[in-house]
Length: 468
Image (cartoon, rainbow, N blue to C red):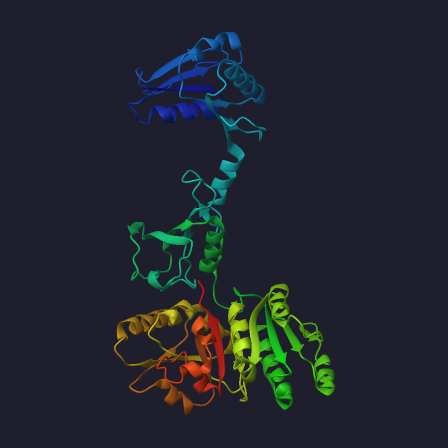
């Protein structure tokens, strides 16, 4: 039998003793010390031994502490009583494990004393009832946020996504509660509105996942960043086209209502620089980099300092392998502007591929389409990988219902790139994966539509990093 000593004085201690009496365990025997004895219902006398005396008296408690207790639990209402009782216990036994109900944020350096802060527990429990605040398991694991439950709102970017396409690095969806019933997760399971997800992972990662689940449309370029960044390398861009590119970037900037930072590197035309400087406004910042050293490092510094969520470049710059790799490593969406008018664009064109990356970036696509006023068109190239594609189509149809945005699905027997070459007024959206950093010559004999993005180079394109 394991002997547990409970030292109580107050309502919390009495409530704890009553709860313990209702918890069946044939292996524990409880010795209860109270300054003033209380009566308890349905207490098993074989498991509970009650004593009435003041535990702050060393003389009175010393005889009881001669027994071999596994641990002591102290739940008392006065700090002075707790301090003197602890002192008596340590006089008799230096190593005995003591659990203390702490209402006063006691300073403690004793490794064998565990302080249970009642204020922390109560405030954490009250936080559980606040909307849009993650519920963290307090009494499971180490209680630091490695276990969390999240309610999926109706407009979440996670709604109607298959679990198998959600990248779960350093975290996992371990359970789903739907209509108050447990649903075990699987790769093909689709998340529904109002699902309660139980997540396990690193606390810092789970905080990011929580924000991603709670994010609704109308926020782009969030969660990637806050502002837009027009990147112009005057060694790569035709000087006669710079003003037109800037006009198109400002058009996009007005749609998203975020600050626009115009960054010029390798400046080489004084007249153009002067015109660009005249564009400065409250929400348009013009920066000219005259020092051409460490441009790669300065680019990443700008992304961080300005909290950039969308980088805008010309097609000449995106065709540069070095620049394209730099853009990929920034993990920020990229808008590649072509020579065509942006204001005439009506549709977002998406070519379904054999992977599921388009499902991962679907919420961002709907967000962009909503803010820019675009229609969404899916081009499904019919081949042997139809099952995965049909699941992606199903996902997009579900999102279109949620956000009241119609989509069109075209089933193509030939490569959709040929169809889109004859189409006007559209912007293509693609996942920005590492394979797009490969040199273009390597894609000449490829059948991968994503690698062949440059076949539609005459049109505007958006490349979205594959994230949560």
